[in-house]
Length: 498
Image (tube, rainbow, N blue to C red; front, top):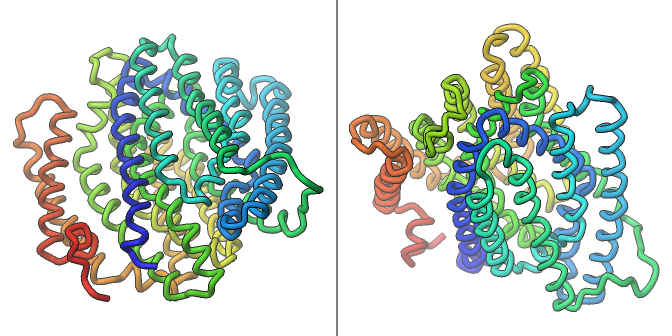
């Protein structure tokens, strides 16, 4: 296995993610500006609440199923058997999760979910009821990346078009949520149809064997639950602190671009995880290390310049998202909060992506998920503890800033801990000379963007952002070409010898 063999799948995934990103930069700013900080905050909080139960419904099944289905993907009978097993399990866990959610929503009055958010929570919960039939993990294991990309782009384009057509003001909140659910419906229908064409039947030919299934699922489920709590605790906490949910709206806008970049990088796991799993199964440590080196290289290549540009262009990014229609639904304070969210959390694009690489492409294929679980427990306790401490002491007047600082600090602790734990596999990849070249090029465009942006006379924030990113991107690529960075040379068909 060479980097050249991995590249087609990587390119397809990147094209898919970048296209969806471009579409989201059309739909999300439009929706944010017309809904306003309060309505967007209510939606973000409700979506975060539902997401916890979505994780319970999945029970870590997709992650383990990708690994296990990838091992037998050349044997249709064994593959069908494993698909049936994991589908059956997810069907049961989805019913249990939904029942638990209903008990919390309606069994405690308004203590858990207030009356304003309750209808939205019920609408968004359709996502994980339908999601059990999506079978996305099957197509990732089979490496059907072109199909996944084509379908995802179509769904994103349709969703963006519907948002622009039907979301008009803060009264369109439920319309916005329904359109968000539409992606899951279409994905489930398309995947179900293709699953049949792949010759995979959901009708068991005999009793399903659950032997050896639950042990890895329990570990991965606990990991996923902890990671979800770790990622979503900040929004939930802000929602309980601020009943209007305005802070949640500012926070959601501030981290939107950050989440997009993280999604771009972590989506590549769909390429690397199956290959890393097979390499370990074949005891091919050389190929395993090659895959992880390539993954780390790409993470540095994308996230470092993204961190630099997003911090420097934060005011323009927020201005574009919330003021593009000049609707006036966003207060100056809410806008300032969104800018500060970007300042404080942009670094997560790098730290979180590297941590996720270590988990999915090193610890998971090696069967050492427990190490990640204990590390994330530390991060979760640290994150929640520092957030509460900051909010009720030093940052009482600025709770969002206190939560952001706690999130960034805990993420750094998690990353350092994971690097120490897996140093024999990842340290040489992170501290490579090639990544040093990327760092140098990033510093160069950071200095350029910082000093040049104030002198660029472009009133429209989107055009200003696009112009600066385009020029900085050219400088970045040219610099890396001069420094003979691997990815650039490979793209130009001048791959260096090992």
